[in-house]
Image 1 (cartoon, rainbow, N blue to C red):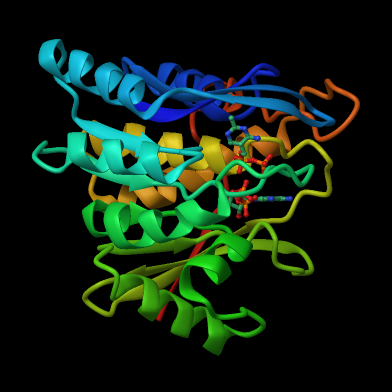
Image 2 (tube, rainbow, N blue to C red; image 1 turned 90 degrees about the vertical axis):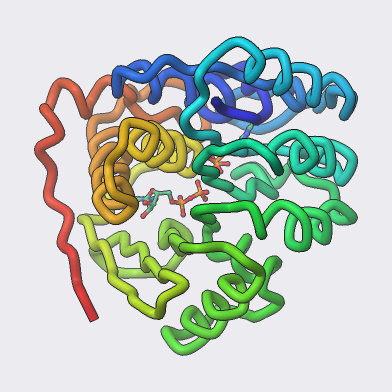
Length: 270
Ligand SMILES: Nc1ncnc2c1ncn2[C@@H]1O[C@H](COP(=O)(O)OP(=O)(O)O)[C@@H](O)[C@H]1O
Ligand SMILES: Cc1ncc(COP(=O)(O)OP(=O)(O)O)c(N)n1
């Protein structure tokens, strides 16, 4: 199940999640938190669902279908987060939280006053949190400029009750590599490094990564294997461009299947 916002341009949000699930042979269900009018140039408008209607969508699907794993994306308001938490609290599912806050063009997809509900109510239910660097800074309250800051921010987030944090490195100013760092509550950690691709077609990379991770854990992969394989999915999606749209174009969800998952990701254990 994906609980997220609709992206009319099809590259991020619910649409990216369902395309990713489909490519990974997972039957996806969707709970829509908001409609967005957006394209690759930016978000033109947001029309949120009521919190009650979000709850109704979750409950009606769980009542009938065998949900194995859930991911959340754009949740928009504290009221929606609270209903998501109320609905998921008693459910026996793996929960991947992608703490979507700001779209590439700068539009806000989470109200400022909703951050507290995210950190105090939703994060304690999460199996994995997948923040990019700016999101990790907001959640932890720590400015991330060094490896040491990354570690401190991860420790602070793990103390909020999350079992694992994948710190995505797409926003880091690295030469040559795109490196994500993974921290587990038991203190273990590793890095995943892939070639950084020079492209403007990165709309929806975070949604695609967290959807692939959800699809793999939902199919019974171990958390570590799922985290690594999802990195391969997004790497192939970025490196095989569709070249559509006048702004930040979407990634290519077909690429992983076409490449049979073959992709170089270096795992650095510490
Ligand atoms: N230019 C790039 N080349 C290769 N991988 C990238 C690039 N940009 C982002 N990624 C990868 O895409 C995934 C999503 O990261 P990121 O872009 O930071 O998330 P978000 O879309 O939430 O901002 C991560 O695995 C990251 O390493
Ligand atoms: C409806 C909706 N949800 C999420 C996003 C942002 O997606 P993300 O994967 O973080 O990608 P970028 O904003 O980095 O392209 C969105 N734009 N719309």
